[in-house]
Image (cartoon, rainbow, N blue to C red; front, side, top):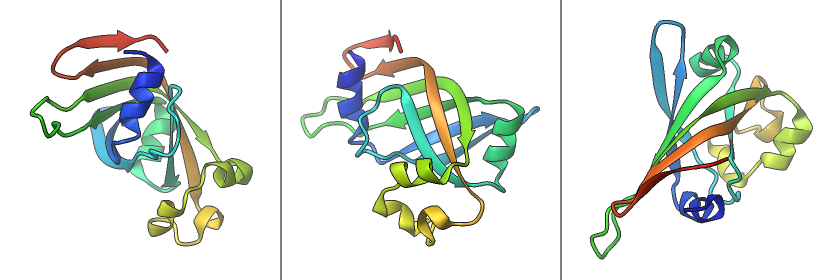
Length: 140
């Protein structure tokens, strides 16, 4: 599978699980996946600054993302995707505006003007997938 083929599959998955490392423990939480964006190895997530995930990423930018899609109507297993990467924390309002989609209003009612807003850029270093027929690592 190529990165563009994987991007098409990721556009159909609404949420992923993000795991961060807090020094002594791992912490995992669901994050909204923006399916409107063509995946190029970078995932983008909005968050509030005063959260555990941001504290974790300040101490260690390493993270993992896991995505799953349900089986097809014909019984073929869904796809499982595991991304290992590093995060960059962005606090630039222009970047907020460029990455904003209306569905985010649910969590951030003042949109990109929300106080304490931060953007997480998760850059993939390694991507693995399993889809029932094949599994592999995609070079990023």
